[in-house]
Picture 1: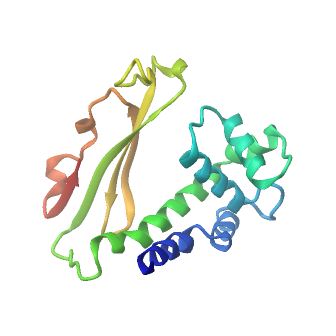
Picture 2: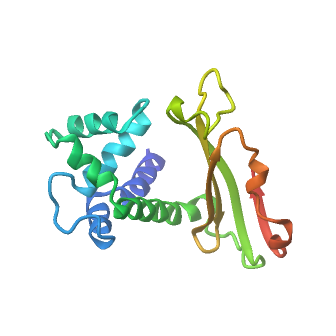
Length: 191
């Protein structure tokens, strides 16, 4: 039971109302908390993406209104998602989460100071609307004719992404690896 509480504490340390709303104000996503509050929006998005298939923004809107018991219209909801500060808010939350959970994964006694850099690289695929199949061809065309792959190189010593790229899922992942000459005195781990 203690391990479950410890994991729950680590999650709530990042995904708590005060931190998310505070980050929303700091990055300019909101100045005052109105109908679409940063915390409620982030939690609705996280829950929706983890709970079921989301095909379009209107699905997220329905999920948000169902979870928060608000009757915010689609256009104001969409306006919140299209703000440049929304991207900054999500980047801040992901950055905090990765920073807080990184040491837990490595262990506190791990010494990486011998390396100039420790880089982790991997990609994750996501299906997108089938009309995008010309631009973002999927690998599994019968299941998902259109899909993207998000490639991330993460700098472990600085707790920040070094490179983020989005490509068609059918494009080879090795095209997004860093050049070998840039990895002198570095520890590089890739899938």
